[in-house]
Length: 490
Image (cartoon, rainbow, N blue to C red; front, side, top):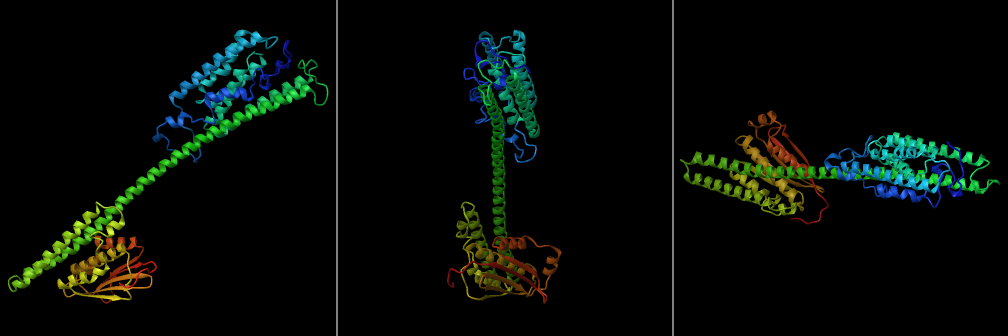
C-alpha cells in the first residue's frame, strides 16, 4: 500500500487511501452522501426486488423456513437493469476520473489508460452482481484496492461500486455461510489496509500537510479517527442493508407461501364440505327410499296373496302401497328442496327436518300395519332434542325397522325404546328374529344402512352398538349426548 502523501494545494485531500476519505467537498465511501446513489439504484430498504414479484406464483413453492431456501432467479428485466447500472457507473467513473486529474488530486496520478482500466475493473463487474454476488464482490474489492494503490484520481464511483457489491452479497447470495465469510473477509481486508495507511501517515515525518501530529490527541490523530468512524459506518451500512433486503424478501416469500397453503386448505375444506353434503344426501335418500320401498314390497306381496280370497284386504294393502309411495315422493321432494337452501337450520326446518323422535310412534305403527309385531316405549322424562339429532334418531329407527322386515324372518317381534337420561337420549331397536338375517350380517361388515347409522351417530358425538343378541335376534342401540336441559317436557 502506498504511504499517505500530501497534495500541493488542499490539505484535506491528502493522499490517504480512498477508503478513508470523508472530505465534505467530495463525498467519500463511507459517508451517507455516497451511499444514497446506491440506495436510489437498488434501494435495500424498499427493495421490492421485482424478482419476487415477477416470478409467477406457481414457481414460488419452496418453504422459506426450510434450510437452503433462496430467492427466486432474477428476471430478464433485472439483468438488463444491472447491465445499465454498470454502464452508468462506468461513464460516471470516467467523468469523475477526468475531473480528478484536472483538479490535481494526486501529485503523480496513474497513467490515463491505467486509470480507465481500473475504473472499468471496479464498475463493470456489477453487471453480474445478482447472478454471481460473491465473485463480483471479491473482484470489485480487489479493483478498489488497486485504485487506491495506483493513485487513480477517482473515488466517488469506486466507493459506490464497493458499497453495492457488499450489499448485493448480503441481499442475493443463496449460500448464507458464503455470504457471511465473503463480506467479513472484504471488511477485514479493507480495515487492515486502512490501518496500515493510518500507521504510515502517523509515522511519516512529512505526514499529511496541514495537520500537526504533536501531542497525544493531535489534529492528525483526530482526523484519522474520523476516517475510521466513517468507514465503520460505511461497511456497517452495506452489511445491514444487505441483510435487511434478504430478510424482507424471505418474509415476502413466507407470506406468499402461507397464502398458498391457505388457498390449498380452503380448497380441501370446500371439497370436504361437498363430500359431507353428498354423504348426507346419500344417507337421506337411502333411508327414505329403502324404508318406503320395503314397505311397498311387503304390502304388495300381501295384496297379491289375498287378492283372490279377500279382495277387500287386497284393496286395503294396495291403499297402503299408495300411501307409502306418496310419503316417499314427499320426502324426496323435501330432500331436493334442501339443495336450494343453505345452512343446517334451513335443512332442519324443511320437510325432511320435520321428521323427529315425536313421529317414532307413527313409524312403529306403520311397521305394525305391514304385519310386523312392533311395540314402542318411552322411558324417562322427555326433553327437547336438537332438530338434527332428532332427525338422525328417526332415520336410525327407520333403517333398523327396514332391516327387521328384510332379515328377521316371519313372525319376528321388535321392540323400539326411546330412553331419556340425565345427559343423553338413547334409541334401542331390538328384535327376536332368527331367519337368514344373522347369516347375512356375519358375512358382511354392514351395508349402506349400517354405515349411515354410524355416520349419523358420529355426527352427533354419540355411540352406536349393533350386533346379534345372545338369546336370538339383533340389537341396534344409538346413544347421543345432550346439552343442559333448556326446555320442559314435551
